[in-house]
Amino acid sequence: MRVLVTGGAGYIGSHTVLQLLGAGHSVVIADDFSNAKPSVIGRLEELAGVSIPVHRVDLSDYPATAELIAAEQQGEGIDAVIHFAGFKAVGESVDKPLDYYRNNLDTTLSVLEAMRAGGVRTFVFSSSATVYGENPVCERTEDMPTSATNPYGWTKVMIEQILRDLAVADDSWRIGVLRYFNPVGAHPSGRIGEDPSGFPNNLMPFVTQVAVGRRQELSVFGDDYDTVDGTGVRDYIHVEDLAAGHIAALERLGQIDAPWSVWNLGTGSGVSVLQMVAAFAAASGREIPYRIAPRRPGDLAANWADPAKAHRELGWRATRTLDDMCADSWRWQSQNPDGYPD
Ligand code: UDP
Image 1 (tube, rainbow, N blue to C red):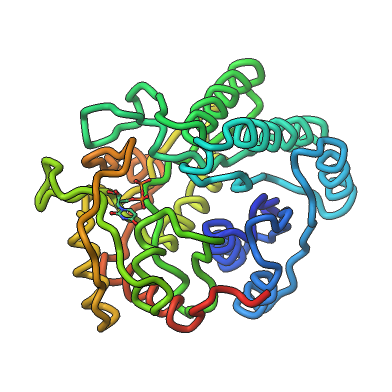
Image 2 (cartoon, rainbow, N blue to C red):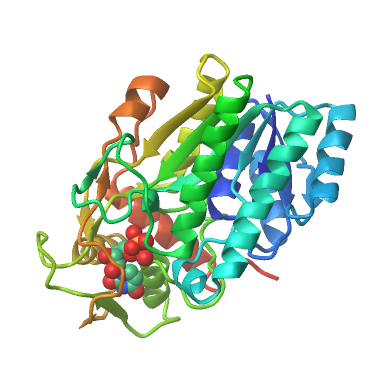
């Protein structure tokens, strides 16, 4: 298949691009590089051993997006789109809700309309476990009602609804919604990985930056939750397993009749903040100084995936261990202490 990967220069997008190429697919990247460095592309080409066509485009610009897809359709053609492009910082979304609704909804609508105009009907969407909202049942199954606690999460809920409506209106679509749990880790080469701009909001990039000396200590947000050691529990999944889930979903969409499908991508196991700190210290040989801080507003005590549906329907399951996640994150961070070069 020839796949258009929006946000292909980002963290999950870049790992997925490599696996698509490794699985024999060809790839076209569309990215505006607003939250990714152009040097990612050279590294992808070096690892894949091929050159990768890249369109620098603002996907919320419908004419530009339609022109991109139309031009590709006149050339080698596009068989499917994997849509990663979007804003993703929860805290920032609370401060700038309009920016988040505008960007995430506009880019998705523009890509879908351009696909419709260009005759492309296979679409894989980066959703998130955040759509399970504050449901008290920690183990998340795909049939739970969706909700959100911040504007970022609402954009995911809303886009899922748009995709459902589209599938009802036109059953020639093949739409796969992937609900990611907490992606961590990096490519085993250490050449690509997560490179957050500014202050990291997520646990793993914060821990790796403490380990490499860019930050002094980790704040552990709360130690009085009803969990194994009082700290928050999440389902961390290696980005390489997550990327593999996209290939499996894409291939499955080529075989099924349903126009809309949803799959959790998680390991099914919960890990606490302090368990993650200990695993990372062991994998890196570095101490991770931390202090207990107040709970972060809006945080849940614990959640993890029930990944059975993805296993049953996609034949996919996460295989990398917590040690793999920590070792690969550390290799990336220690080899690239300041992230990608400008
Ligand atoms: N966390 C923490 N310190 C940090 C960042 C995160 O203690 O600097 C905790 C957070 O409270 C949660 C877990 O780590 O229990 C995962 O947080 P992250 O923001 O990575 O993911 P999310 O909460 O969105 O699942």
